[in-house]
Amino acid sequence: MKKFFYFFLILNIVFFFNISNTYAQLSNTSLFINAKQFAQNGQYEKSIQLLQQILQSEKSMYIYDFLIETQINAKKVDDALLTTQNAFKSFPKEAKYLYIEATIYKEYKMDFKKAYEVMKKCTAISDKEEYLLNTALLSGIVKDYKNAENILDKLISNNSENSQYYTIRADIYSGQKKTSKAIKDLEKAIEIDNNTTAKLMLAEIYLEQKKEDKAIKILEEVSQDNQNISALVEQNIGKIYRDKGDFNKAIEVYERLASKLYGSSRAIILMQLGDALNMAGRYEEAGKVFEEITTILPKEITYYYIAGKFYEYTKNYKKAEELYKGALNINPVYAQVLKRITVVYLLQDNTAEALKYINMVDELEQDVDYYLLKAECYSINKDFKEVIKVLEQGLKDNPTNTQVLAFLASAYEETGDKKSALKYIEKAAEYEPDNHIIQNFLGYLYAEMDINLDKALVLINKALKQEPENAAYLDSLGWVYYKMKDYKKAYKYITKAVELMPEEKELQEHLEAVKKALNK
Image (cartoon, rainbow, N blue to C red; front, side, top):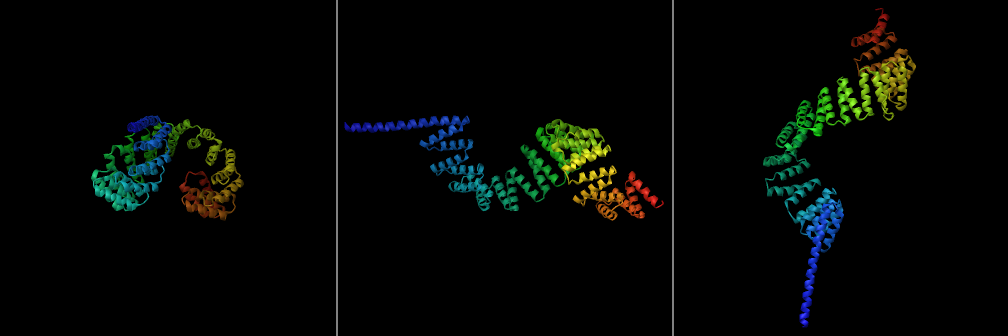
């Protein structure tokens, strides 16, 4: 009877123990289902808590894998790294956990050296192709080229028809400047399966070697064979032509590419087309291209501005005006556009409109150009008192600006105040002594005032060295000689000035004065 009791007791213990394990398994299954639902709903914290609870009673690779994935989704990279390390401790023969650990170091922590160290441990356990390839790639990144080459040599010896191996090894060779070996591997990869990556890499090497024609030939092949990347490749072909100075070829490529594209993609190519047209000196066409961009990107003010400048440069002022106004419809106080439209109206002698727009420039944007343009508006109208008022204000904000100083000197000269004119042009010469415009102006003013004539000769001759055919400078030199009563030399230089600018009234007057002095 006692024996039976012990047997019954043992049976119960075993029975309850099994039931307990079954309940634990059922409980973990329920927890896992809940954890999965939480993760699917983005409630990662709750999912992580349940998965960690399961691992306390059950070390399962599946649970580890799901926990690592969930922690990464929750952006808990350090926690995922710790879980991966714990998983490897629990399953020391599972190289995949070292691979995951290395991936975390590489992709999320950007610690390539640590990733490489872990991958070397991984490949010591398993020589799985994926592990070897990633170790080779990391070897290249950390510049352990010898190990990278050894791994790739091994992979190629096992499978000599895998083009990817040759492409990766070529990249390793390129990193060491072993260009001929890299080319050989890339050619082999292309031979095996027309490898697109190998072709692009080979084209890049040819570009580095200045073999643009070979590079273009390869890229054109890639473009024809791969519609998915055709636009990107053709864009690169256009850039190659542009960089080598063959702008017309670049334009052909960009025009062909633009005809295939729509929306913002087309706009990107049109920008490059416009740039190539500009470099080719085809400014009117460039203006039309940038104008088209404004129809694709109607809220992008930059392209109205660029198109307007091209039209302005080609003297198509009405078009330039139209585009600048388009830009101002987007931003009515855009200072750069307000200044450009002011220039357009000044070029058409419409000072009323020019003043209207220059006066719209915000006080914080009133730079040197603002003062010069505003002064020019009044100068055209011969309102030199207002010119002086504007420029003196500009000089307060820009006391060393030689353009303001020279313009101010010119305005004072127009009013007959040569003393003030001299004061400002001498100040400009202090700041910019080698400026030929300032040298000539100062020399001429000395001649007009009949002072410092020897110094005037030196200044004007310096200006003429920079621009020997400048009629104004030749006239100034002649006028100095006139003041020095050296009428023959005066006649020589002023006559030449008149030949260059026969319709200039002031030159004609100077010539008449010299002729009179010579009794001609």
